[in-house]
Image 1 (cartoon, rainbow, N blue to C red):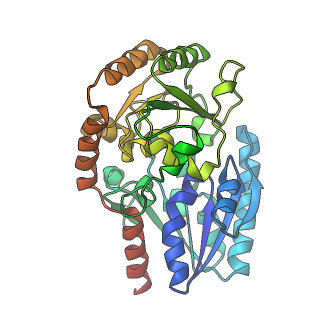
Image 2: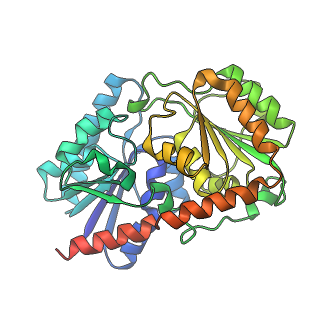
Image 3: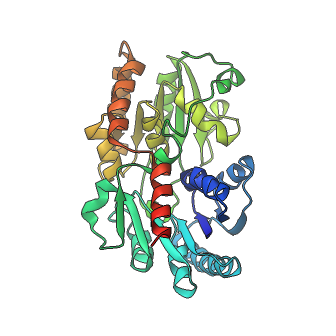
Length: 348
């Protein structure tokens, strides 16, 4: 079988990487195509995955529209040229391209349709399958809606697939057990981010001052950093980020993805943006498992208060490991599920 993977975001590479590697070992052909966004290309290079860049990420609704048109056409061309049977991704383009070739399109999404209206409107009606975590089962997209008890992040951070490498600590002058913090700032320029706000400069500065009283701070940012934050910018290969995150004390920022990654690694994650309270996945992590905490941009004081509360815990890591185990007991290895699902569909 020939499979095309269309990447819109670096996290989507992590989602499919392990499953596609195993499928290649079984003799299937995998074609990787991508838009040039953030660190996606750098990660593909680090993992030595052959790929083709179809478009470069743009900003603004009009530019994003034209990028989509071009990306659609190029995905279709690659699908026809490589005689593709199946296209997968968190991708609008695969659903459009599949209308004009023999390939099926499987869209993987873990955001609520209500919060990703444009992506949903442009892709769901045309997708062969819509594949989401089971906490989105209530959306009921018909017979083509498939659900599973896991998260995208458990395709690459489930204990079956990942164990942190402590070598990252010595590379950054740290030892296991050292207190350090990850601050993650995102650009909020995706199509679903219009009108969304994250951390203000004032709150970022207050957070930095607070955290430096307790340990080292590493800042990773999609957007440009103000002069005050530049000395703390994290400089290391991006494929080592999860190792550093796994040993950290807290993860704080306005990123959804890294908050989820921290949570499934057993690290307390605090995020601040206008999406708080709107996404089912993070509401589950907040309310059911207590692994993450969300704050609206106007509630920076409450965010600082929660940090004080967490740092006062006598055994924070032990407490979070207990929460993590309860979470993992309820979830499955996403990569294992995906391989099983593909195998079952191939037999039909």
